[in-house]
Length: 122
Image (cartoon, rainbow, N blue to C red):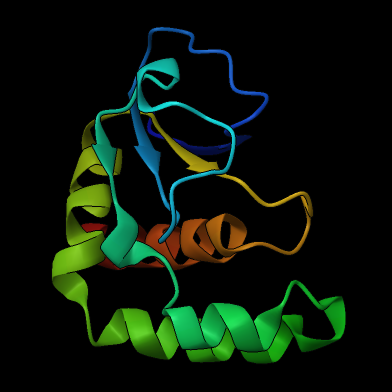
């Protein structure tokens, strides 16, 4: 059984199973690179700088953010396909830095990846 879980990078406790990917365009403030056990920093799978700034973690912009972010992802399969491939073979964790645990790019990306994974399986 595969799964895509989410974890806030500031609270993340590695559990030794599955692969771990940071899905932020910018490295999280106050975190040293050595402090985070990562398989990869998937910054190209994160929203563009312009979209991130427009969204500003405003919950009222959430649905439009998702629509715009998915459109960006549609143009960058090389950024997200490795995540789908990894999820197809086991558990992956997407690390994010947002304080908002309900409206952030990792949630939207997880939904996008799960949809692509389901399509891939037919």
